Image 1 (tube, rainbow, N blue to C red):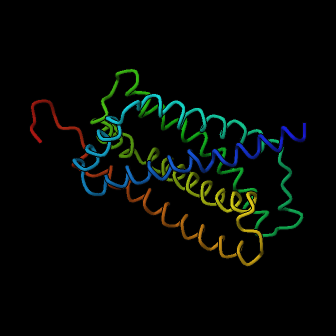
Image 2 (cartoon, helix red, strand yellow):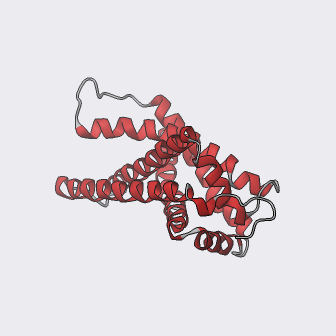
Image 3 (tube, rainbow, N blue to C red):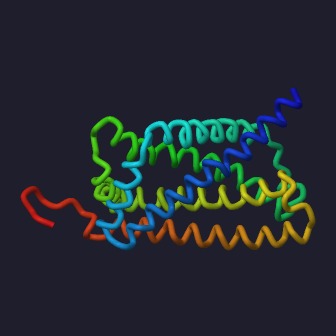
Length: 217
């Protein structure tokens, strides 16, 4: 049983980086093109949707690994024994927030998937309309702040998870290396969070608004 638990945790840790972490970074860079305008964002979305075997890649390269990482992560969060109130060490707080942001990220990703990719899959929206759809969502202040919390939680969960990954896989083994890694991933969290928020703000721009019927862009 202990061996299986060790294996499950290793798979969970690895999938959090490859491919789930890579997908988060790709998603960040794709959404950040919104800061360059609607046309650039549509070009990027259409390029991604034109990749060969894109549905196969999404199912086996993103959604199934993400599902395993999320479900097992929720199990770990439920069974974890947090000792922040007893010790209060920095890493204990980070351990707790890793679990909290994992739950938030799970709920956020499920909602975001339903509002975007699932709508395309059932034919309720087109890839080229996703920018306009995001504008409709994010012009609502409640949804905007929900998305801000979601992207910050996802960014923190990834960056702090990378710190843990490097330790658990024997890459950063000494205190000095781990302190340096802490600084690097905190900086990465600030960069990723800033880029995500700038993307959300860009989607609120007037050029992402749906044109009236008969109007020409």
